[in-house]
Image (cartoon, rainbow, N blue to C red; front, side, top):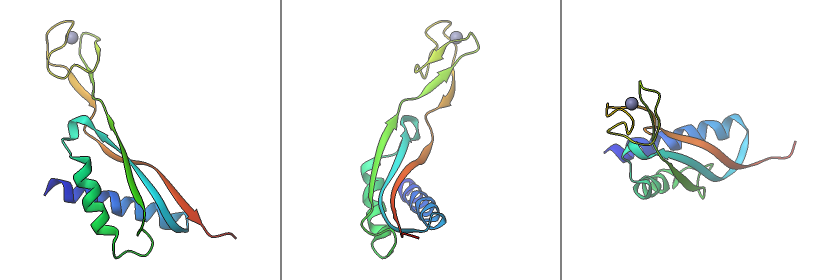
Length: 113
Ligand SMILES: [Zn+2]
């Protein structure tokens, strides 16, 4: 399943980042979903919740997200969000952004030194 692989990647990325920062607890993991990634964020969040159940560090963290609109660019110089037909020249524009799924920030608790 597409969403499971994505949820697992988010979990693994967030866990690694938390360990690198010596986190004691992770409160929130924020993800940006490109609109063109064709992912159902609710489903990813559900799978994420099942993945963190048995993980002492990640358990209780909340997955939040935002959906990023696509950005396309055309050889004629057009830049915008038209995905299929360039409004200026009618060609097929290139997708610059919109397919990515990225952990953009996290809220963690760190032990006092
Ligand atoms: Zn164009």
